Image 1 (spheres, helix red, strand yellow):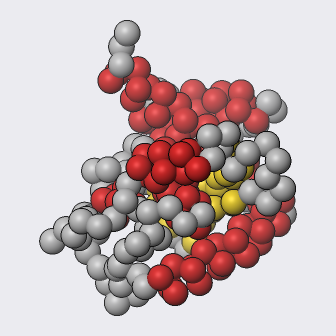
Image 2 (tube, one colour; image 1 turned 180 degrees about the vertical axis):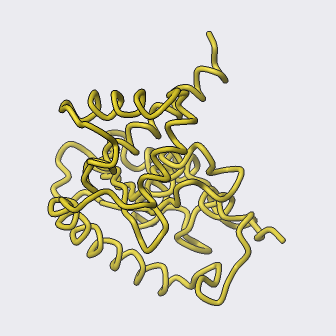
Length: 222
């Protein structure tokens, strides 16, 4: 059963509300990193929002999007969905469209096909949303340090994801994937299994972008 969306404000509406107050508002898609939690992969998308050119304390918000997406709204669009969710949350932190919840209409819609569980009740209370936001800020800094130290060998879940996304990107075989790795990393590798965790993450991100670009070309041929 889907969640009731009435009362939740979508991201475009929140953005229009913010632009009325801050005509010089600027948004940057600051970073998008791939993180592994157990056997599952997530894209951590971070946006920065400046109210105007003099804003010394911009709003920074993040959102975690599971890869591959589990709903029709997120599959093959994980990066775009992640940044949209992060933007919606950032605008929510600024006070726009949060009469019911800091979560946006878009964020709830993207989760509609996923049944609630005891570990993830939905919707969250405002206090839970605020606590989660603070934890994500701390986790983002921790993840940066982990990424810098990620020199261990590529994991089996990463290898599986590389194969899946390579197929979607129409890379014909292992050799084509190896050459794609070389181009992405600007270095020569003997085989895909020689990648480090960090290198594998970079290649997966590049493959996701390649798949997204091919998808847009099919939808908008002209």
